[in-house]
Image (cartoon, rainbow, N blue to C red):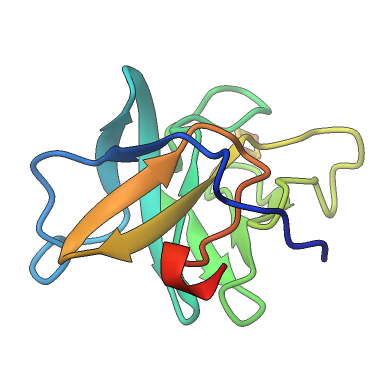
Length: 122
Ligand code: FES
């Protein structure tokens, strides 16, 4: 997995979400774009809210493989949270977004290639 510089990423605060009390996955607005935010063993990750297969809401998707993938509950297609590639549905891609915790708030990057490193880690 390549790590890209985050200094060019455009981070937006995900308003109205308290990461300490939210029930994940939680719906959020990322710069006017609806997304879903999953809490993983490794932090947070955003995805488009609907499955790329038949546009079923992914709110009931299941995290799997050490929280590195999600499985849609409708037809059980699996997508990598890093990059969104379909695992058992080659050719399908789920839009994914970098999400980070900053000052107790969640921030998301519209650039799907951005990493979740905090600015102090760069
Ligand atoms: S709608 Fe998600 S796998 Fe078919």
